[in-house]
Image (cartoon, rainbow, N blue to C red; front, side, top):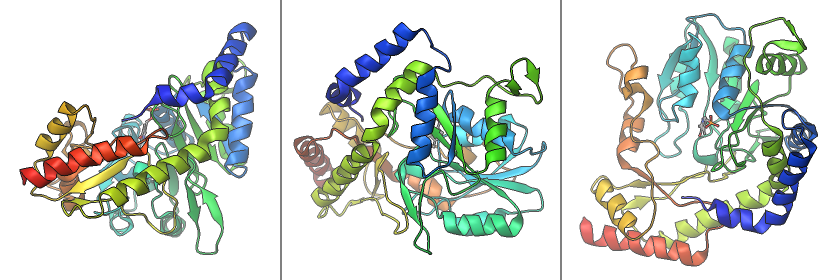
Length: 372
Ligand SMILES: *Cc1c(COP(=O)(O)O)cnc(C)c1O
């Protein structure tokens, strides 16, 4: 699905040097590389504060801890997402309220969010799924009207730009109150292990998040609030310092690869290629097709795998059908339930070649044209 070795090969000398420098410095935790990365990423994000942490799931957890919510408070998020989004809500004793997504863009359905708001709702966690942003302008308006917080899950959309109706361009993760991202190796900006970060434009909130991520202290051994231990280590930060300047070109290459897939699949009637929303650039964390219901998806995945072509189902089971996240009553989310049955994601990364894509699409066509 990704080719991390090929990407490393292009920047190997810089990465090796950066890692070795940290090893020789012996400043493995909270070294200068971590501060340099926070500053560079902050600049990239148009000045939002950056609080690094250990992974994307921690980022979401610490963000929600920072909002001072009470047990039982409701947090609305999409049922079509990676489990981490809802997991941290439940873990903190808050109530995950799941809503459906748009059937073509995979993004949280803002009308559904509006209907789900009650007097107990305190926050919304939109997920910028597969690499383009949820409708932040409408979500921000809802949040303002109902006095809610917005925590953006931007683990799959770092570097994506949103154009607001006044023409202002803002980076994914800097539009709500807090943005949360992951530097898991296969993400668009991946390190060589685990890593994550939070973004916010609010100085007081930034201080609080930083404190929570560091055992609730801002002065060592003086613990004002209950926190956690969640750090980005210096070696990962050093790797990210090498990779951050390449992020825009990595994302551009993903976009070009996606558009090439679209062209190659233009005459294939049994798939729907991804739909781009107008207001957000797409950074194609995933290239996800919606198959015609007549297609035997398991058969297709199996066939591709036999040809040495990986394909993945993101996600096979919606959160509201997971034992841990069953909702009250017999709720149905038709768009998500249909997507879970018919989506398939093809290999997508910054190093995909035209030949590889042609090979993948030839085999995809071969199966679709003979098996249904
Ligand atoms: C990857 C991911 C996360 C979690 O990130 P980790 O670093 O693996 O903890 C959260 N939300 C979404 C949408 C993700 O894709």
